Length: 423
Image (cartoon, rainbow, N blue to C red; front, top):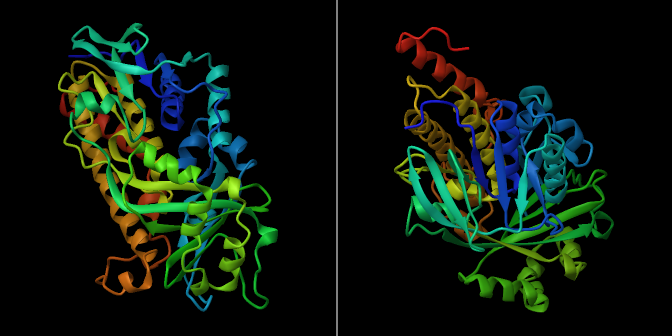
């Protein structure tokens, strides 16, 4: 049982969650090493939405100022109907109410900035190694191996290795991501190619809801000159080779993207008729079944982010919840003691995080339902789709001070134990 702050933490996966965890641990004086399969020369495609709860964390780590200048800052996504009338707005950020605007930024930009800061802090990252398995786990720590035969050890091993996590297989054998039945098809298109009708306000980003579902257009560079355009389609599940084949067959993918083009308003038709073929991408929506635990029976192996709870991107909370995971876990580990051993700390942590993730998943499903084809939306009951309410209705999500919540729990536990010096 670990009853003192760990001296050596190993992180499997140097993606967004893994790198952010390393920075958060460094902030608390805990040393770590990251292990990553992909070389840094491999670029990451696409962009992501970061909402105020994520930006607050990145701001605390000293990254927000550097990122906000490299992305598209905005507050709402407008919902339009088939007649192109704005029927609602969803707040992905609001500087006045939530402290930050939302930020859409290229994934590679965020990765680059995280890597730069990790290098500045001299956090070691080993690239080109593929995690294989846990060799042993006991009171002395964790020993683990890579596919090239090398072996390493640490006090704690944390899997931040994504939705198809190898570390998760050790914690929850047999659990595999579940396909939702929907695949997003997107492209990146110059806004100059869109035929915006005169007399109709088209504040971006926008989601147009019609017979075929929803078609989303979201600027993703600083000046808004490039727009992600996309929709989701029902599609049979494929294995890895099948998804790769669909992505590679641009003609078939474009035909699928354009299905029902005649039912869309002219602005969507103009996007579908000017698709830069090389920018076509797919995103099959997978979720991780709710797990009983995010840690091993020996408590020395932990998973977080997409490895523990992959969330579809509709609410812009996939990466954001991963950041909350790492920030809260990093806030706990320095306070491990006989009064608060690792098993007690991470049991609290998983319960606290699961409650929040459950609320986010409920919100995400409501937002996903607003994007269903019209005929399917009509079958839904009240409350199954998202509608705006009072100002600040998302304060529970965006204004949460997750690190302070952890600190409050630690103080309460120490006082309960009769230990006043909580630092």
